[in-house]
Image 1 (cartoon, helix red, strand yellow):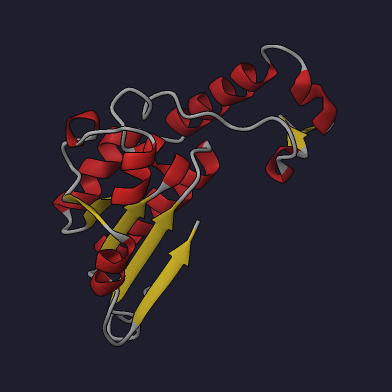
Image 2: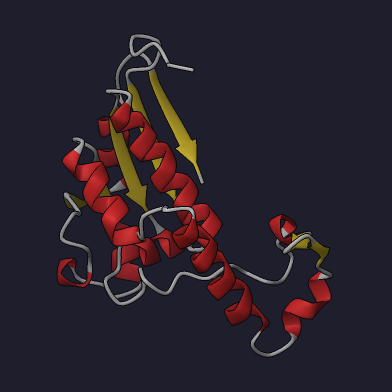
Length: 166
């Protein structure tokens, strides 16, 4: 199915979580938008900053407790209470990374590069950066800037714009 580009002109995505499934949802949506010729803006805030922080972007995790996407793990029922056991989160996260790799899905850094190469813009939240004492040097080189929420809303203005919160 091919989306009519004139139907939606711009996608603005807010990524506030650092779980693999959350970050990859934002990256896949943004990459899909630029591939369809749409303008794409991603705003990383709070724990979503992990996706663009050099030291954390390769170590994203899948939360093992209270995660409805883990109802079944490798086809078997996965009781949430097992997430409390030491090492379970690491095992699940490793499994998810291997699954993504096996499917040929790019890593976080490569996704960021693909999005910006397609014209997408990546932004870090100024407030969250200050809260977590991060500097521009801590972030991926693909980040266009550190901006306020108001500045991001300006990026999202215009007709035929969708804002997606993850």
